[in-house]
Each structure stands twice: as structure tokens, then as C-alpha cells.
Image 1 (tube, helix red, strand yellow):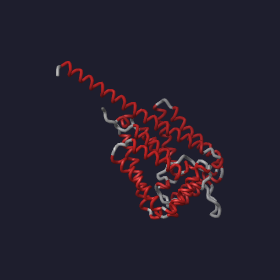
Image 2 (cartoon, helix red, strand yellow):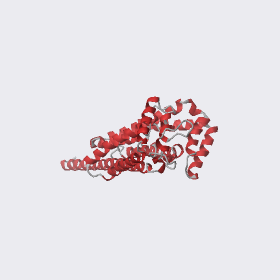
Image 3 (cartoon, helix red, strand yellow):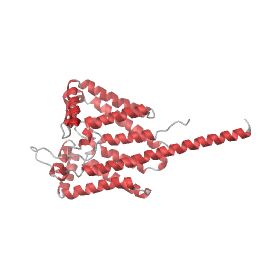
Image 4 (tube, helix red, strand yellow):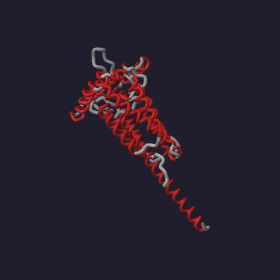
Length: 328
């Protein structure tokens, strides 16, 4: 090879490598922007859901006598250890001193966080909003989600949406605060993939380990409760039909559930996501959002967010978009 040919080859290789790096930077920028805008939208929706009329009433916060149907916070506290139940009860008492004022404050704060994340152009301002988001997520995770049912007596895991949607809002905000080098190096993509892999596997293990989940009555009730909430018939009827099927086929239903989650967990921990894993993940999360989470129970009048499936789906898509690709 002549000197001129060698020089041309080096230029061609350098140009190819430069284009590859530029394409990687654009891909990472899209993933970063998608996570920021997705988190922004989820906070805005959470704020709007707080505007439901029942959120201004005692049905949201008051601790009623045992012979009266419990409020949202009362039911949440009843499933927790005594120390956490006492913390939630204290929060409900404080809220009860000025429920309308506090509710409007939460609406303004959550919509403000969401709009600020979506419209922010300054890096410094965005960081300040993300730090505020993390702080508020901690408050909501304790008082509004009972630590995401991690220590709940009501079988924490997949059917209880452990560790809670707002905990993942916190995780997303932390990732967005990281220096951009962590994103361009592929670290964030790997952390998202492996973190979700751990969640999938933990859910599968818990789902398989709790004996009552292999019982027709217990498994059926988990879905039937979602189907019984106030909602359009087209949403509730498939859930009710599936719960009735589970009553007779609990072992098969739970086994399929465990296999899917274990498979997604192993795939996420073993190799980079491909289109097949992406498709199965998103289909399973959509099915979960409908049949288990009832689309966040948005028609119930007492829901604070869209539940855990949407934020998991957002993270799956972001992790997939930013996955390392081989250079041709």
C-alpha cells in the first residue's frame, strides 16, 4: 500500500468513527430529552389528578371510625407497619387543618415541576427543578405511597406496584442530574437496563414465593378489585373476565406471570435490549397498566398518579434508544 493510499484509508476510518460518535451523541441526546419530557408530563398529570373533586374532601385524608369505609390515606396506613402507619396518620391530621389549601399547593407544585422541566432551557434552572422533584418525591413516597408498599403487610411486589411510581420519578430525576459524561459513556443506559432487570426478577421471585398467589381466590381478587372500580365497561369487562378465568386456573396464570417477569429480568441482566425484548417489555407493561393497575385508576376519583407501568415503560424506551450499537 502506497503512502497516499494509507493516508486516504486513515482519513476514511477517521471520518467513519467521527460520524459514529456524532450519531451516538444524537441518540443519547434523544434519550436524555425523552426522559426529561416524559418525567415532566408525568408530574403534570399527577398535578391534574390532584384536582379531582374527591381529593378536596375527607374521603382522601380523614381517618374514619372502623365501621365506615376508610379514606385513601387511612387504607394506605392500615397496610403498613405501626411506625409507618403513625407517620401517615400524622400527615393526614396535618393535612386536615387546611385540606383545600394543601391540595391546591400540591397541584401548583406538581404542575409547576412538570412545566418547568418541560420548558426549562437553562441547565442550572433544570438542575434546581430536578432537586426540587427529588425532595418532593421523597415526601410523596412516604406520605402518599407508604414507601411504595416495600414494608407493607399486603404482599409487596408486582401486584402491589412495589416500589411505587414516585420512587421511580425520583430515580429518573437522579439520572437526569448526572454529568452528561455518564450518558455518553453508556453508563446510564446500562444502569437503567440492569436496574429494571433487578425489578423484573424481584417481582418474579416474590410472585412465586408467596403461596397465596397460587390460590384462585387470592389471585382473582387482585384483578377483580381493579375491575370493580368506577370506569367504562370496555375497560372493566376484560379485567373481570380474566379474574374469573384465574379463579379456575390460578397455577397456570401465576406461572405464566412468573416466567414472563423472570425472562425479562434475565434478558435485561444478560445482554443489551433488542427489539424483541423491547416489544415484550412494552406489551407486558401495557397489559399490567390495564389489568393490574386499571390505567392508574384514573376514574376512581382518588388517584394521585398513573401508577408504575408508565414510568417503567418510559425508562425501557430510553434505555433501548441509548443502548450501545456496533459500528459498521
